[in-house]
Length: 462
Image (cartoon, rainbow, N blue to C red; front, top):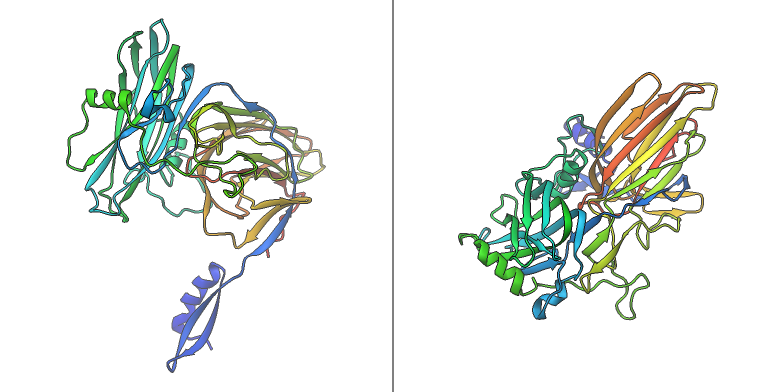
């Protein structure tokens, strides 16, 4: 028997896939929740490697150590000496340069706000000619209060692009929308001169949501007309202590030490005896800010999937590893730029309906758990962990009209997420679809870009 005052409770449990039973408990009836065992779901799909490749523009990745505990040099492109050598890449850069930084600071063992982390970025000319360095666009956000992690629906159609969850998500959204919270700036770097301080940002742990831990994600788009050196520096001090002055920052950049603690070393693809395998976090200079892909004509007669940000051990059955090569890397950090954080994927999809009736095409970005013969593997219900938080921009060009929009996705592992875009194509008609997504630091690679139609039918998720 179900008591009237329990009906709304049971309805809520059922909606999230939880079994409910009434059991005797101390002479009273109580509700017992029994978690549903996830069931593997095979979705028939033809997985195809993603056409195109990364461009050759510079992307300086600074994600190690993720947790910073002490003042020092985090990463530099110049040749280091003594204590700074382990974090120095000895590789100047010029042209279009993206600097990406993602770090965390913790006060969990002391009073929240007792200490503070500050980050700074500096530059200097690397050759014998002066260099003009321009900051074209930049974004930097804290986890708290700028971009807290919040639970969202799998797909939110967001015309204004105002939805985000986490600082990596928000920074990637800014990149997608050509927005930011830095003012554009220019510097003339003279050969032989001292370092120039570009910007600083703080990471406070006096936060409303405990434990006392906060993070900051930053992306700076720079352009230099001559070779330059760039560096990131960390300062750790008391929460009420004045921020370092310019000379203090430059002294840390010149003299170090290297910021601590160093992380457990990454391993090659095959792992190491007695160590196993570990991707590691990225600290180095990568080639590639954008992956442009012209996909083959899609007619909707089969379900197609293209890996996005595929990595060594997860390629969804293809031979393709999309992780950007590192021209120089910090010893112990990742061997490739796994995850391609802050890299934009720009996908062009020609769509054609060869049938005699209208056909609706569906576009998804999902995170299968694995690939198998003839398809991809999902879970029902999916795992709790969110594998992707980020926004996509889409455009549809049809003979009679042009449409565009933005969608925010929050996709769990193994989740067959709803489509972020559906278009109806008349018999014999065509359309051109463009999808852009910037890989956010709050994502766990890889993802799959999936296209199907009502001619294929929906997978059986029972």
